[in-house]
Image (tube, rainbow, N blue to C red):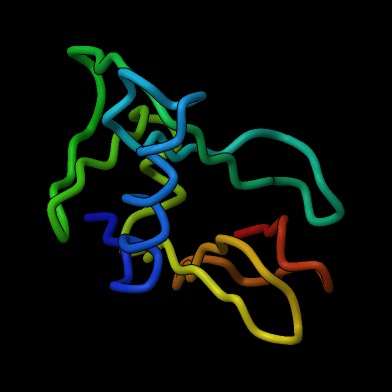
Length: 108
């Protein structure tokens, strides 16, 4: 399962109201090759879901994830921070054995 924190859910709901996200109702999370540690997180808004997507409903939102990425993201929470150390979404991934200093990439 992939979940979303209350703070991230509030931020996503406000972002989905922006004109550039019109018609989009899903949060798509994935893992791509790259970054300092080998794998990077990716988050987008999407208007379409695919039959092969893993779907998770949490806090009134639907998160989508392709099957390959789900292997890396099992048990992950999408969170949002607006503190002094940086503003933005980040992934709290219990599977990551190593993360880079910026927190945007990881390895298992």
